Length: 240
Image (cartoon, rainbow, N blue to C red; front, side, top):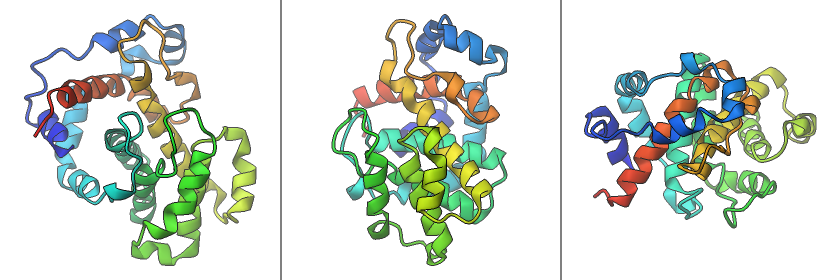
């Protein structure tokens, strides 16, 4: 769906007002309580960021091995791209090194490959983690710690934060601080896209900002609403 990113960058998606869903959700008590509504990243700011990083973003999207993805409107390619965009931004703001950045990009692409359906399923992260060996082939995974962290954050993304010590022990993670940062990025990026599950649906939101872990994630909530509205409009028009 490179066309949608092109649409954002080239302005042709700004002809429509995409604020409706976000404006509805502003009356949500969780948004009022846990978001700084005056400190949301604007779509224009996000667009500028996309332009500045256009080539790198396109490279990551074009390198998605779509044959492994779960085929679904809810958890398929469009979801993976949006999660990737949020994580790309968060990784930059946290100054990740090249290796950790690649781990996050791969996690965003393949965190749902183990899904069997679109229902709530804590085990899909584990199933996705178990498939990683046959999907990723970047040289960084010759380092076993890198591969273990990728698998660990993928399994961890679908289970409660309270399981963190079990995951660290299971995958024999040596650098716990590194794991916690990377897992927070994936969990938050995936969580931000929960807005798609309740878009244009009263003031309830499937995203509760209370559970976002990173300060920069809180700034992306408005963008998450607007990007989902854009994707819906463009997908419905069947972009060629």
